[in-house]
Image (cartoon, rainbow, N blue to C red; front, side, top):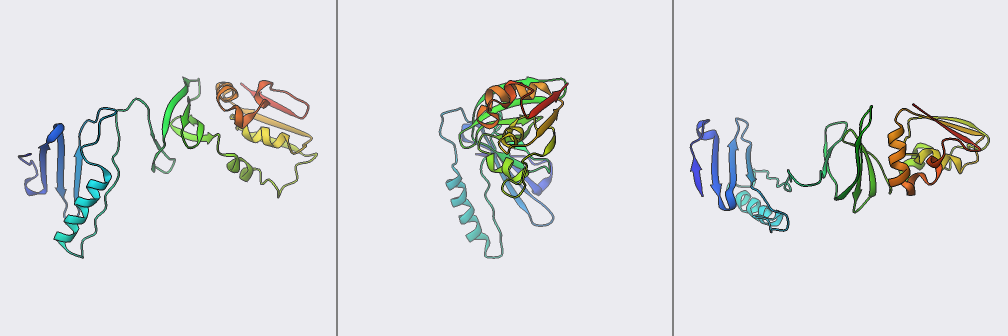
Length: 217
């Protein structure tokens, strides 16, 4: 392992280690110290450091520094993989999913539409990089419609959006007089009709039925 000359004096140190790894240690005026380890990991190859290894190092550093020091170890951020496993929420938080396959990936006139398969959540609709609905999200749909609290029997209902078909499919079971759903992007419905069928059932096979109608551009 060798140390490189720091352009910021004593505030930054860069080391090069085994397996072409780069270790960057930086200190800040508020006494914060960050340590980042970067290296390329070929799929199927054991990591240079496991999370457990890093936690052991963290504990050793904390003991050497003293009780007044707070330390935190974070899991590895994986970049450049075949499948995207990270998604940014609308409030700019990073989330990681156990994505194992991409089953649909196209751009419509309105947005980037993807359906990816998660080991935990099943097929999941992703629009412009934002997860929308997964096969395991029935409780989410039931919460939106307040199932068990609202009586939809004989009612006329308007749904704006909802291209995954889940809400419309569940509302149809409540014996409404008529449900009209307005969705701007037909490609979303076509993708969900095929890849999220456990969510929308046969509702999107036809855009008009006995007690519902789908309006799309």
